[in-house]
Length: 300
Image (cartoon, rainbow, N blue to C red):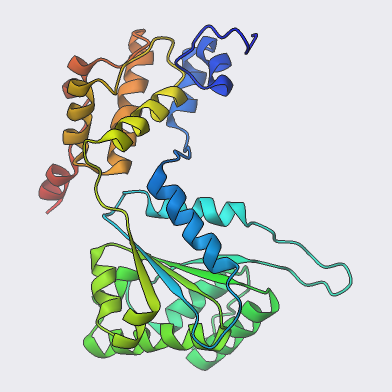
């Protein structure tokens, strides 16, 4: 297809060729993970880039990426990690470089589980050592050997699931990690993460909060819908940015980015399956999407 004379002007150039593909192929593409750029996400990436280039010093700056569950935090840090995925081997020294390491916070603030998670993220065998000192020493040696320059800790709000004493020990561990490695930390979590970090005065002064609040009806939200529509291989324009349609999607998703994407994805798959080739506002209530608040109520 001649991309300079597109048949589907509402789509991105790289998506236009897919619009004529069979339904099964298009449905697979619609359901695939995708990066959706928007101003707040780009600002978060820029803030992490600044941290990555910060010179070593005793008191390193840190970032706390905070927002509701499913509102794009993990997608942002995965995008940042991929952009700096320079796992290279130095032929002369056999050293592997991992500039950005992402670790999942354990369900509870347990130091042994945390260092086991660090070792797993580093691709190092844990050998089932139970002693904290062994895990910690091994993790710290490999973190230095692989030249980790920024450590991302996801789901950091899990700190609050432990006892007060466990919380205090783990917060002390975070402060010690930053001091010992002299690298920035990026903590990622919900509003509870902010509460956990701010419960320690010294940590609160070191972590700059970066909020990803729920979306609201504004120009940035309408740009997001335009971008999302341009990524969906539907042959007709849906007009999701039109006021009634945009508000319908925002209300159903309760302002949460992941829910907007999930709702639009479900509706787009239904449109392809029905041969309609565009999203229709009157179909939104019929595709079986359950708003997050209702899902939590049913689960509870």
